[in-house]
Length: 336
Image 1 (cartoon, one colour):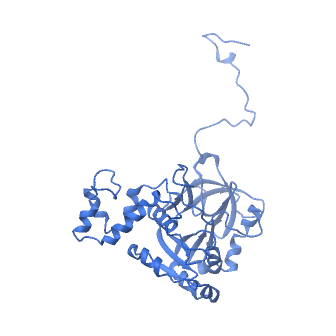
Image 2 (image 1 turned 90 degrees about the horizontal axis):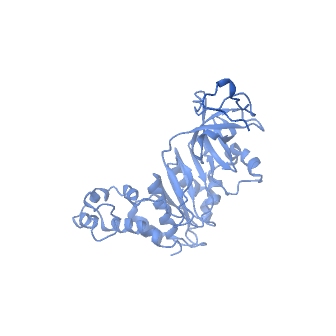
Image 3 (image 1 turned 180 degrees about the vertical axis):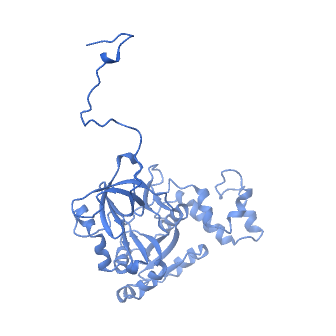
């Protein structure tokens, strides 16, 4: 092997050719100032379906983004072939800063945080009043995730022909959450769809719920077939004949008055990622009372200043109970 001494001349050093071409490597990332913006509609096995103006474009993430991943609802900048024609592929080079994030973990002991939806305005929590029975602890967890991520919650109760909504309304009444009650007959006639639609116009709404509550049936009723065809390319990517809610999918409401994001049916909703100090922001009547709380107060301990705040008449005791019930949901199993 040839060795070089201390006073080696530059001409004595051989440079290895770049086998991948003559272009030298650089750490300077391109600015892509001519990139176009779009909205991610769904993600499947590394391929993203993106709406760019009025076209559906298939894309992949650029290597320069590193481990940062785009999710449904993200606003992204793309370069490359944006024609939307078959077998074309664009490249996502930037992800716009998110206004809200719906996140979850597999369970409360799992440190891996998964972003489900970005930039949604509200979270529609769909629960059946019977068949299957309501799961209040799962609803609580979804509420905590909504408050933590900056989404406004909406409670949608289905199958009111099988059971009345009174118990659930009593449980969540003190949270001032908007709600809609529907029955199967109203869903078939379209009356329920109109009431739900009033809560969705002009917003991006993510729908969550465990299997069997009628979430996807409601979404299908809200989004007419001609609007669903806008995302027809999804089927070619997944290899399935129709969307079966195995990944989140954004669908446009008629008249371009908003978006519905259908998410996979939930079995669990881990809250390992949630910072309890952010949940208090959803309780503006209680938040000023935390100024005298001890540092890192969990708001459910003997020295919490919220007890005095409520005792002085600044807020309803039921509101403090609701807050503490939500904050303690990590210590309870979802089937309780």
